[in-house]
Length: 81
Image (cartoon, rainbow, N blue to C red; front, side, top):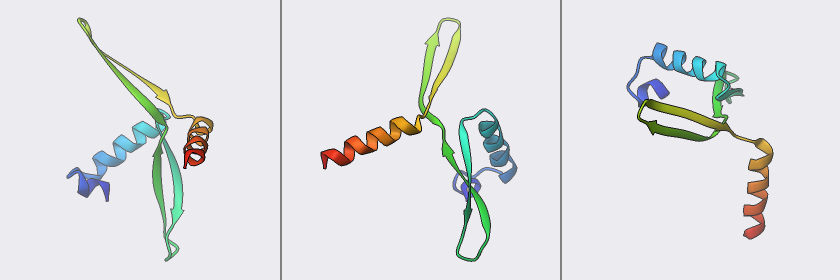
């Protein structure tokens, strides 16, 4: 579990994941294990984060991941093999 791996409270992890999901930066997917239990997994929707340090402070920007672009990159990589 993520909370154990990063030594954080479960409630903190749930809160952060919820915030990232609401901001559109994570995509939730449902998984079913062999016992029939359901659980959520998350996939990032961010390809790049940009941090700019200026005299007035920090500016943060991001670019969303494009599924089509990722598929094209995978096809290109596969073609090179």
